[in-house]
Length: 475
Image (tube, rainbow, N blue to C red):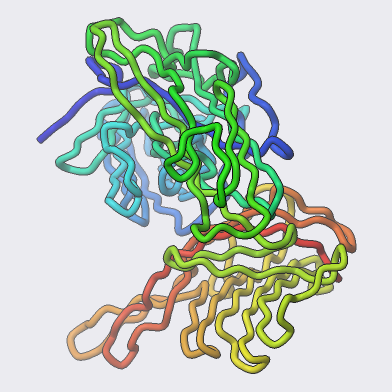
C-alpha cells in the first residue's frame, strides 16, 4: 500500500493551468482567492443520526465516506451528504455538501473520497487533493490530504462541515480543455497559477490565489520547506501548434506566443486535422538542479459559422449550425446540419440540432430543454424526479435513442428489480440574454442512457455527452 501526504517530501508543487479566450474571459485578479458560485444539488441525499459515540456515513453514490470519531459530537445530530456540481478549480467528479452546514466538531472527522480511472481521466494520482469552498464562495486547498493509490482514495481530516470536492493541483490539460473558433478568426490563450504569501489557516487550508499571469516564472502555491527534490518553479519553454513550435503558420492556422500568452488564428478553410492541438511546454526546476518536463495541450475546434451547437457523444463530434443570421445559408439544402434555439412560452429554453441526409434521413439529432435558464450552472432534473428538464440524442432515424432518465435492473430470484433514475447532467450558461434574438452561450456535460434489454434484465447503457453552443434565441 502506498500512502503519501501532499507537500510532505513532495516532488511537485501546484500549477493550475487555465485556458481563456481573450475576447470574453476576465483577466486574473491577484491577491484574491478564486471565487465561484456554489454547486447545484445533484442526486440523492444520504443521511443518518450520529451521536457522541461516533459513526460512519457514505454518500449515495459511494464516492465519499465521513468517519466521525467518539467525542466529536456532544449529542445526536442528523448528518447528511448531498451531491452537488463540482465548481472547484480543476475539480474531479461531483462535489458534496455536508450538513448541518457550519457544524464544528470537538474532534477531527475524516473525509475519504474514492476515485476510479474514469474519474481520473488520465490525471496522475499523485496530483490529487481535496478542496473546500468557504461561505463567501472562495476556494481553499487542504494541504494535509493523503492519497492511497492502492485503495484509490484521498483522505483529509477537518473540524467543520461545508462544500467539499476532489481536485488536482497539477493539471495536464487546459481548462476548459476545448474551445471553438470560426474560420479565419483568432482565440487567445494564457497561463496562470496560484500562490500564497501567508501560513495555512484552520485545518491547514490554503487559499487559491491567482498569481500575475505575465510573470516570467510560475511560483508554487505554498512556500513549503525546501529540499533538493522539490520543484520550486515552472518556466515556459515554448508553445506549439500540432507539434510545430511558434511562431508558426501553415494549413492548420497560425500560432504566436509571448511568455504566458499565445494567440491562435484559424485558417480560412477548416483544417484536415480538426480540432487542432495547441501545446505549452513547461520546465520545472528544483534546488538540487532536478528538472521535469511537462506538456499542457488544448484542443481547439475550427467551426464554419459563429452560431453553432457542438455535441460530442462518447468522443465522437457532431456539428450543427444556426443559419439565417448575417446572411448565412446552408451550403447544401439537401444535406443540412441545422441548429435551433427558442423558448417554449413558459420561460423554458429549447436547443436542438439535426443532421438530415438527402432531405429525408435523420442521421443524428440532439435536444436540450431547460425549464429555468439563467446565467450560471443549471443541474437538469428530469420527469422521473418531478422536473421539467430534458436532454436526448438520437441516431439513424431514431434507431438509437439516448435519454436523461434511465433504469437499472437487477436479477432477483426469477424476477427483475427495476429502479428508475434521473441522470447527472448540467448546463452552464456563460451568456443568457432573456430577449428575442438574444445571445445564448454555454456548455454542457453529463450522461445519457441507451435502453438496455429489459427482457434480459439488463440495465440501460451509459453514454458520455458533452458540448457547447453559441446561438441566437428565436422565440
